[in-house]
Image (tube, rainbow, N blue to C red):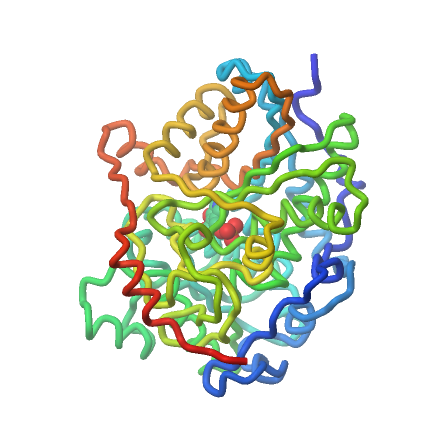
Length: 455
Ligand SMILES: Cc1ncc(COP(=O)(O)O)c(C=O)c1O
């Protein structure tokens, strides 16, 4: 019988993050200042980020050591298990070997704690008293509140309004960990008030919530901003997922042929994939592993967006990033995978997709929930709706393997559990989930508002 739960002892948890920029043949384009559209200088970011994280954003060093206090906080829940999905394999009748790396056992239920802990630590070191942030599904906000409590700081969260109402218990968790939570767009900031003036019933979006949190941080000296995805340093903090996985595959003498992860802003996907991709780029990999990012058809950034400079938020306060984007004004449908409703994507993940090292696919939400349903029945874990996108991609791959008889080794990034997404599962079970396919004219309208940048 193959090993089912592959557990790396805490003493073997990686103690340095991997920075894929060291191994990229073409270095990423610089971020541009939102006002001047000139390459951004580090001091332009100091009103909202500590210098330690700004340095991590641009460093070309391959390994960045984790501070002792961060290691200690991570060890509260790491390492996370790599699990062989034997019952799922049996149910599908596939010769494929399916593994999943489960990040849902963190205190807050997802991978987001991996970077929240690091970011809270560095901000505390820089003398900050409070962090402001946005949250979509509520996972990131929860993770940051927990991390701020760990390091004795306050936390203010602007939560996208549709999720604020869909997921009231997320709000409770954030408050339990000492956070203050506002439904975004809110009356707290000028950015929020501007949106409400135009559309009092706005459901909100991550782009709007980011504007609110950035404004809050920029207008308070004791407050910084923290972003739960997209940025290079966030993806680097998440590489602990893939680094553990490499060790865990060594323990059982296997290696993935194909890796599936869901993509919102790209952080759990990048964190899982980059250590494997880095090996491939350095010519050290034993297999030509494929990497597949999975996104919702309602917010198809990688599969239908354009690769060009865009703002990260609605109010154009963030730097311009070279990335796949649906346009900073894009308003995604209110699908249940709230964490995947973002118009942009990590610059690093975007560049790898553009250069052909990473593939991308998109699914509507009903087939994704069907996949989650089978996963829950066979593996006994209720996945977060975001993570279920990766499961759906992997199941389709396993069924292709069944058709061809290929003994493919498949790795799934299971970024979180869905215990606070039961409202979504209820809708699915009642047959009330609606599949949104983004109409072409809506996409064209959003893309039409992209800035024209010539470097
Ligand atoms: C469980 C889970 N997975 C995935 C995501 C998507 O974010 P990212 O692409 O940065 O991993 C989120 C975002 O909230 C999430 O909560």
